[in-house]
Length: 232
Ligand code: SAM
Image (cartoon, rainbow, N blue to C red; front, side, top):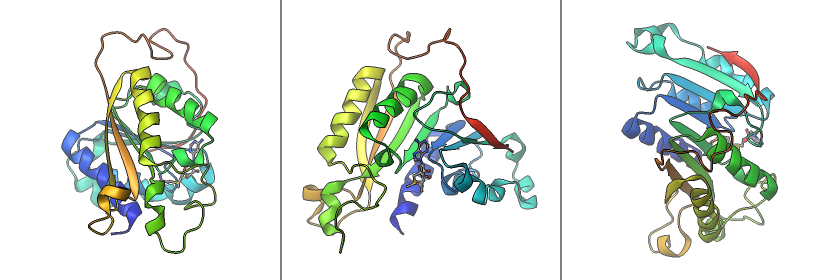
């Protein structure tokens, strides 16, 4: 299957194994991942956020219930919300999720905004788990005809060491642990030297019993900076 499907399948498999109830997709674009997650009965709240409301609105009607959906026993328990806003801004409605996904998003941010993203996601939203994917530039020589970045809007493409260094810093700053994996296997023999085409970090929050390093603890003022586009 194409790489974007493999990335979404990775999230779907994680959801099947871990059964999160509240899932938030950052940079949800045309909601294609949300559409796939809608069919998992454990998920009760499915939220998408993107800076580009026009992209979100384009296909969001496809998230509305089909008559056949009502044949699913748990369907009436599912709530879907879509927001326009930036991952660099806080919004109190997006705290306390079981899983936050960020699929091919961070490479579209400047490094200053990646820092804000880390603070907002791991320091403020504080999900129990997070899945972050980004291109692995060590794989690029295997992509035919590629010069420069994989997409003209990418601000950077990290090597495995660069991704790891960012992820480990996030973990020590905000109390998470991370496992590294990916999707898109090169031909056998290349795996060790170049790694996966898309690298993925799976983060899990460490239970600590205090929120020393989390920004905006229980008594922080409520901020609402995103615009609600629809609620289903
Ligand atoms: N996650 C989707 C997927 O897996 O197919 C789409 C990835 S697309 C390459 C990146 C998305 O991130 C775009 O829809 C873009 O509008 C969104 N985006 C870029 N900067 C953002 C920001 N600061 N806050 C929220 N979304 C942002």
